[in-house]
Image (tube, rainbow, N blue to C red; front, side):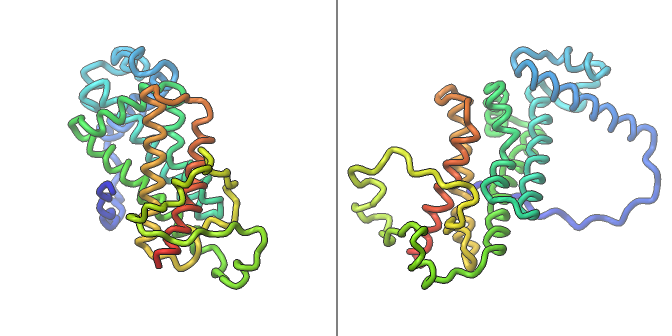
Length: 275
């Protein structure tokens, strides 16, 4: 599991002093640069945009531009880091407002999905720079990516806390509840997922399906953490496959939803058997 960012430091007491002109000018230039880079990269893709175009659109000189990001890749990192920050906040807010967990989880990665669908190279460059780049933008990117997994776990925790307590007697007699296979240890060669005749794709469960067993009250933090990691890893690879041209970009959101719904059910059932 990727390293989790350290919890934020306690907020300092508000400073009553007004922001100076120099600081206001710096913030305004950063805002203009971020807006210009976002619009150009979104409309044309990474390769088709030059730093001079971004500087002109932001009404700053190229020297000023490079004081805020050291390269064109750094500018893309600024854009994507901000979009991911917004996505994480939106996803957690959706969960707290009672949205279906799959909807909240998908909101976390909407910026990566949209970037990958419109211009796959944008996401490919972002992933490359996150893994191998240098500079402060890379550190921020690593923290934002780690926050996605932490946010998935928080969404699962919120969903589990909001569900009614599990009644095994009622569940056993519920004709609409699919039967669970008994747990088999990981080394058991009789894994049911490998049985002959099993379909290539598991039946799709809608996001509102109340049988997402991974969300049952009483799940341990370890169970939720493992489920969050599996969901994050699967979504990440689905997005990367699109960026690398190994999968079509159309309906990426639908494929991600199928994966999330499947994992919420299958991993929950597995964890239930391990208790």
